[in-house]
Amino acid sequence: MIKRLACLGVALLPLAACGDDSGAACEPAACTSQCLGTGYLGGSCVDGSCQCSGHPGADADADADVTRDDGGGAEDAAAEEGGGWRSQCEATGEHSYIWIADTGEGKLSKLCTLDGVEVGRYWTSPQTTGGDPSRTSVNLHGDMVVTNREVSGGPSSVTKFAGLLEDCDDRNGDGVIQTSTGPTDVKPWGEDECMLWNSPLTTGGTAIGARATAWDGTENPDTGEGGFVWIGALTTGDVFKLDGNDGTILERTHVTNMPYGGVIDGRGNFWIVGGMCTVGLCQVARVNTSTLATDYRSVTCGYGITADAEGRIWTSGLGCVNRLDPVTTEQVAYRAGGSFLRGLAVDGLGSVWVANTGGSVLQINEADVTLVHEIPGVGSEVVGVAIDFQQNVWAVAQSSSHAAKINPTTYEVETFPVGSQPYTYSDMTGFQLRTVILL
Image 1 (cartoon, rainbow, N blue to C red):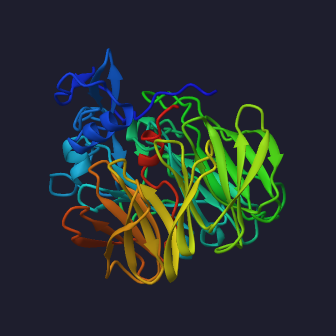
Image 2: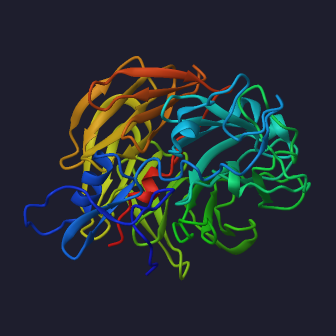
């Protein structure tokens, strides 16, 4: 069993009490939800009481001594032309970002989830416009990887970006970090010093349809060191284990269900939903990340995939959202008629949010898999959803080329432009990984 710290944020503070449990026994899942709901990044049971960690603003001065070349001559990492802050993330030190693959142009957008400001845009592969980026995954430290799938003129590959400025690599030794500051400031491939590595999954020009992507949560949450990235390839069925530090391929195995999406559960298993199956007898594969042993389960529908704090696996597809309990083998499904449901995310507060290609987002009750609410008007061709650390729901609209931020209480929708044809529907913020509880 992989040991991990549950619910860790980008910045950790000494544990501070978060709420009166009135003498009741501390329940890990309830503790995590309570802490997240009050603005912390995580929580755990300590000596029978709920304790919160990772208060927003803890890293306010973390990058104060790092300079960045923003193309405008500013020397302070957070200052923009004329003074001030580029985004609320930089102003408050609350490092809460969403990373969205701009598939149509081979780039990646990084947005501050506090205000929707795009703080960086990057090429994702040496093939630039032909890179075909899709899935993203964010680790416990805030670093991320993006997978380039059906690459034009080159192999499928994985690229890692630093989440924080102080973790970028001053490769030319000039004391200044050359990195993008927004959508119009895209550095040439290889020159953005917040791009840490690019790892081809094959040699030559063979694209193997790499898709399923997930960090495993074994990295050091304070430094980002360590951890492994797991990738599944649709075309070949290959599953890769990559070193999170340098992208080296460490191990390789194979599954038979055509990997499409992937998620790590609280026990450290890599779950893969099969491709080319949206309804009927679909398969999910479970890969033990320690032994590489693999087994398969049939589910009612398959396309998107995520895991909840109880270790249950959720999938979505044509007309269906399905919850699988791997221990009891129980499955419960919500039937959604002819709707094509795609990415989905668990918020840790009792709801599962699901992207509907038709332009809405569904709120599903986690406990009984019933519809709570449908939010219309989110965008054109809604592909994926994610939760940020303020409990807002984010949706990616491919044909609208925007990201939508949804207030989970009022259902108010705000939209923010990103690059062309965004397609991400994996763990874009890192929230899912940080809220998986070790069982």
